[in-house]
Structures are given as C-alpha cells and as structure tokens.
Image (cartoon, rainbow, N blue to C red; front, side, top):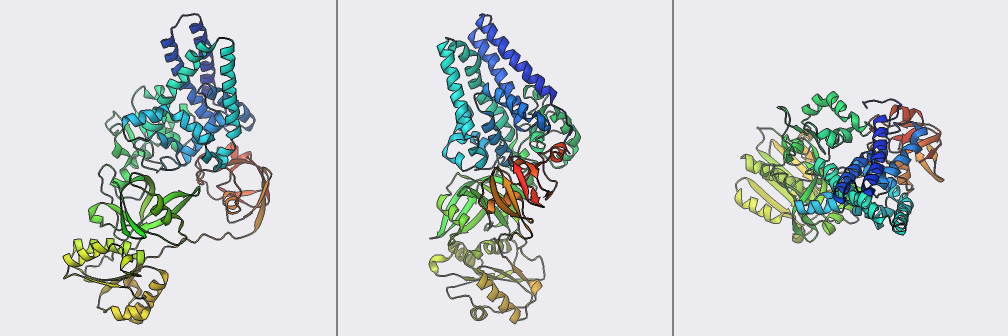
Length: 609
C-alpha cells in the first residue's frame, strides 16, 4: 500500500522549494549589504544547499507531480533548478539515485557504496569527494555501458558548460566573490554532509541487501526535521513514492509489522534498538534465516592448479548458520552483466565459518572470474543458505556412503566433517579425480582419515567413475544412506549402480545444479521503442526480450523496485507479471505508464521512454 495515493501535487515540497529560492535571494542581499560576514553566509548557504537536496531527491522519484503527467515537465524543471544549487545535473542524479535504490549495499553496483570506508578518515574523504565520484559515474568510461546513464551524458556535458559559463560571467562582472561565498562554498560544505547523513549513516554497516534491513529508522525527537524525515530512511526505501513529509505517518501505519520482522527501528524508547548498532541489521544471520549480504573476502587458499577455497569474513563475529550440504549464490559483474551461480559450502557448520570451493570451468563465466579477479578484502554479493542436499536425519542409520567427483567434493566435505564431529556414525567416501594434482581438499581428507581412522574410510581413484568401476569400489551395507555429487556422467553411473544393487530411492540424496535458461515461448510480438524495433515472446517481459535481442534499454533492478525502466505505453496492450512493484502510483498506471521489467506484451506495442 502506498500512502496518499492520490493525484495531487506535493504542495509542501513546492512550498519548501519556493522558500529556499527566496532565502537564497535574501542571503545574497544580506551578504552584498555586509549585514552578514563570509563565515555566516557560508554556514547559512550550506544549510540552504543541504535543504535543497530534498527538492532534488523528491523530483527524482516523481514525488512532486505525484503521477500527474501534465506536471512532469514542471517537476523536471524544479529538479534542474534545485540541482544547480548543488552543482550537479538533475538527470544524472536521477539515474544514479535510482540505481542506488535498485542495488542498495550491492558491492559492485550501488553508486553510493563509494562512501563505505575502512575508517573514519577514509569515510570523510569519500564523503568529501562524493560529487566528484558522481561526475566520474556520469561521464567516465563505464557510463557508456549503462543505457540509462549513457542517455544523460550529453545533458551532463551541457550542464558543465553552463556552470563554466556562469563562472566566466560572474568573473566578468566582478561578482565572483559573492558567487563563491553564497553559492559555491556552501555547496562544497553541504555535499560531504549530505554524503554522510544520507548515504553512509543510514546504511551503516553497508552489508545487508534485504529491503527490511538495508537501512534504518532512527526515532530521536527533532531529528526528523533536521534530516527532512530521512531519519525514516527505511520507509523511503520500502516506499519510494511516499513524499518525505509522510514518512513518519507511513511508519506509524506499519510499525508493528516492522518490529515483528526485527527491522532496524532505533531510538531512545523502551522497545527501540540501540542507535547505529551493527547487529541491528544482522538479524537474519543471527536468527539463522536465509539472507543476502555484501560479504568481505577474508582468505583465499589455492587447493589445486585450478581450484581455490574462498573464506568470507564473519559479520561482527556472528557464526554463519547453515546445514551441511547447503549452498550459497554468488553474484558478480561479468562484462557489464550481473552473473549469479551456486557454490556449495565446504566448511563444517559447527565452525560457524562460511567457505566455498571454486573450480575453473571451461567457458565458465563466474567461476573463472572469481579465480582470476577475486582478492582478499574485496566485497562480494552472497545470498543463502539454500538447498536440500542435507544429511539424512535417522538415528537408526550408522553408515553413510558418499560418492564424489571433481568439485562435487565441496558439499560432501561439509557433511563428512559434520557427521564425524557430532556422532559415531561410520562414513565411506569414494572420490574420483583426474589425477593427484586435481584432488580438492586433499590435506583435509587425509587428516580426517587419520583422526577418525575407525569411522572414516577414504578411497580416491583416478580411473573413470563408470558404473562398473564404482561397483568394484563399493561394499554395500544395510541401512546405509547414499550421497552423490559430481559431474553428470558420474552421477548417472552412480544412480544406475545403486539401483542395480536394490538401493531404494529414499536412501539416495543427489545434488544437481542446472544453469539452463528458460526458453521463451508463446506468440511473438513486435516492440517499437524510441525508434528501436525488437521482438518479444508473450512469456517474457519487455526487458527480457530487449536483452535477448541485445537492444539496450534503460534498467537497473529488474524487479519493479527502482523505476529506471519506466516508459509510456503509446499503443498496444501489456500484462503485469505481478503487482509487486513500488514505484508507480495507480493513476500513473491508468495513464499508460509501465515498467518494462514487469510487463509482458499482449500485442504489438509502441513505447516512449
């Protein structure tokens, strides 16, 4: 539910904008008349620039026009005027800010993640240079890779030319000193304050990527007015179309739900959490639920010539909770596109450590990227834990047989360690590798065999793991659970071998990962968008069809949560794949405004972005 979902202009924001413009004029007059000195003028001007950011911010989300199409141009004009006082172009800021919403705390794609530092000094320096970072983002070489950012490059260049022209004119007419004191210096003072209070502080410690924990609410009397209600930052991220002056009211409506989810609601009340405590954002890890985090690489250990063990740093020394055999999903940018793959956890759950094994794969997009570019200290997007390839909970079973091949040893190592650490169950592991140089976790396996010589039997073979060869290696015992993980031919041979020996399927656990993309189906429709034509199947979204056809169109989150892919449906019909979007008001949808990441074609359509 979006509060105040009515077709009315945001008059409080318009009043704020008018008051700020008037105040700038009045400040200029007072300084010119020597009523206020330089220091006072800069201080007042910094507060005005700080306040003007709220106008730019509201404009970027469409929260001034409130979805009334005829006022969109007015809203953009207001955004551009307000942006001038911060010396940054409105169109570029809009793209950057919506990308922040799409990828909050993302280790690679959140532009505001720039302010994350290792200490207070580095945080200060990054906040101080944030505007410079924004210009690099909007004009640097990588800006050409992002279609939304690329479309703003000309406007940014023209804006820079406009600012340069203003500087020439104020120097020509001997107004440069007034310009510096009333406008430029205040903007330079306000920028790092904005970077700290709106980018760094609300998202501290910048790890959690879940929408209920990626930022916070701070309930301290009076702070909502000083921050223009950005102290309710979590509300803004969850409901970006709610105007800033309604954040508090929206919070009061859903406060109970947020507290039941243990979202970071901090303050000085009895039920409030302690202010700016890291663990307030680590609730899902503390409670052993699935999570999505930006985790720092703590150690990298080479296992073989083409495989490595990656250990991730704990969050505030909190043990990671998972079941032996489960996996996590790693996501990284590869050639400008986010690629996600599943990697089994190889560590013992009792250790509380999160480790994965990664092996080079011919043509593998992500595995090879990890091995070639990942270094200690880098942050990586990790989600999990997932998977049902777990130890069978049956106290009557005292024997477990594991069959592994290649990197399939990764989840099995976790399971073997857990069983040996917890019980007196017997384990037999048959592990097939190409050669001795290809054995992953060789040292760990030998140490386990030595430490638990009466419980753990290890066989490593370099022969092809065919059905016949596996039969030669394996002795069958009653009431044994069987676990299989490895290359597909090996697993098929294992299943055939077990079935031929009368092993029931409920005693067999198999881990299989599949990365096959879903093939689009149904009727094909023609899409015309800003003089670009491409075909989209009725089973896929417009954005998915555009990406399949390699047609660049603006997008960021692909989940209906940022609004970067917003456009106008000029002709034709679409269906929404779900109602789970937070950026369009109902009156906007009725007027033909859609999101290409959420809409599928029902006919040939024409779009305007």
